[in-house]
Image 1 (spheres, helix red, strand yellow):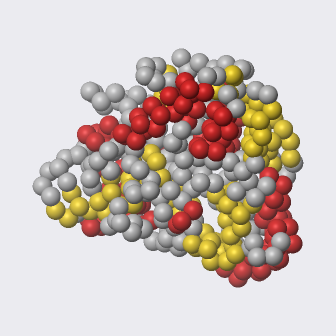
Image 2 (cartoon, rainbow, N blue to C red):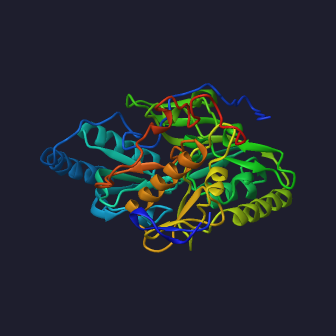
Length: 397
């Protein structure tokens, strides 16, 4: 393909799931859902700017009473708290340092009727350039403890290195497969964290559901309760948390005794395997995979087949390492990313017949983006999960 500039400043470039310990993978179809401002609570009413200001003015002091002085901040830029390093300011911002604080902040926001968003490590999301109108609660609740073959962790605990190191150092196996994946415990249960392991054969996908025994929740109804693994109805990249606004406060993992040397071999091998396929977050910030897999064919394969590796809009770029990952090459805005996503979607549909659906959550306000494919686009006009009417186009499935 000839190099040049296209619309929006786009630079063209040549074109057995096996579970133990009672866990199970639920493959039942579900309505599509993505992280949203209502993911942590029942949907708040649409508020006028004046009404939102009134409610925020009341919520701020309530949070200060709960957390103490100096911990409720205003106008905090969210970009540094995401793996994409993109995002505008939040009206109110707090960091919850314990499960009790986390529950208290969310309940206060619900009672005040203020839109709110629960932020973990900030992977798999894109926050708008205009930020988030309401309260952002950053989950910094990260206490852990080992009791026999069980590891308990608050939901803000970082899977790697914190959680995995706690397990491996105690001689407990089951979590070492997930090294290098940016996630908190809460995010891991939300998405049913998975990785192709163990090395070197990599014969199957390992799911976090395999080692989850129970979790402490704040339910949509405001109740705190402990549930077993079956409650989550885990699926591929899916759990009940996508479809019901419960919040994980802590989780208990049931692990097995393991050889520490072998576990560390797995960790080194998996880190290397991931490094070869994913851009490093410290120099090439990203949100991970941008598009959902279409049944029978990977999104990256479709994008690569259209010659889109290296394509840019502003500071956003399709990385040459993996066609389904966009990176913040240099000062990318959320608008840059959204326009690049839209260009990829249209190009893939035109060239292959498939419609790609974003896997990342779009959080906050993005301003006027023009005519970009909306959520649910992949299931309109007779399409099903991105597959066109009549099934897979010949030669692509």
